[in-house]
Image (tube, rainbow over the protein chains, first blue to last red):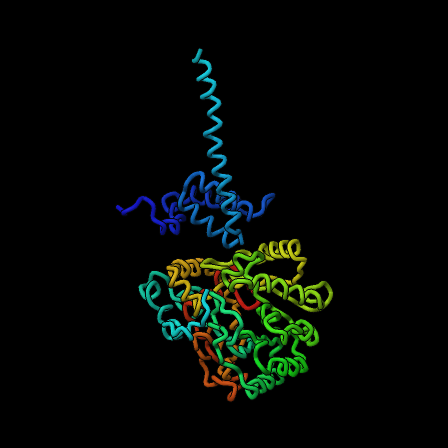
Length: 111
Length: 351
């Protein structure tokens, strides 16, 4: 067993998931590549969305991959940090909005 | 930011042999990654051979007013190597007598060469189709005597190719030094003012993008669109094309890769991004690079590694176009830099 659950070099082996399920692997990577093509959103915009989502799902592979992808696309540090704050705001907001539920329960059960 | 060349610092990597050793040891010696020679063999190419000679790239000296962190030349104010007038004259002879249609002057800052203007006037008079000067932009503002360079370039229809690593200050200054961005912008505005980069002026101003770190350049067209939009909005600047150039793992960039512990990851990225289509269009197949002392190389990168052409003709004194064509191009692992992704050359991506 490796000394850590996450190994940075495993990112390079991502494509190996197709080895045990070629058909599904192919479908996934075809879909993945299509998602990131230029469309109504630019590939650059999609890269920043991916970076924000990577922080939301707290995937170290994705953070590594989309920080490097952003660098290649000329995304600067201010843009990257703003994207991370978008993730933070939604995550924080997702907790806080449940405060309404807490308040309602509290009020209902209180005299 | 470095203030002196690796040579002046007496750095280990100032030695071309040490650089070549590093590029052949470790992950390549262990077989973890294929050598460039092994990789092209997979594609059925036992070697790379030149096609017709079209571009003469002259490195007329290593002196530069800047000390950029990524410089593959290890150029700087402390570098004194300069091409003599006698050697410059030999190059004029080649332009006159060979199939060369593009002349590409580089350095260092070629404008700092004392015979720069003398040479440009003579070479321009020979009527090369495309006469490129690689200007670092800040030289135009470095001293009063250079302030009229835009007019001088215009007079001789020079095709100006200039480095601007990014359209914002932070990344440009981190690679090229404090204040470089602001001076570069001012210099481009001076070039624009005499007609460079303007529609229908015939005066070409292309910019060069180098990644400011251990990553590969993104899509050339997308970056060009971003550069054009930002530079127009922020500084009312126009230019023609953006060339994306991959940083080569040699000299100061190699030193940076090793010091920042990015070397292996960077080599992995280059090897993984190998593009067989780029191999057909690498610049060494139609270019010859001349060093300040008259020695000949397959490209400017091989020049910096002192990999002289593998041919009985190795110096301008013995120049023979036909003999030179019959050679194998010298390769090592730095060549992955030219075949990664969309490929890389002094004219940007190649596929």
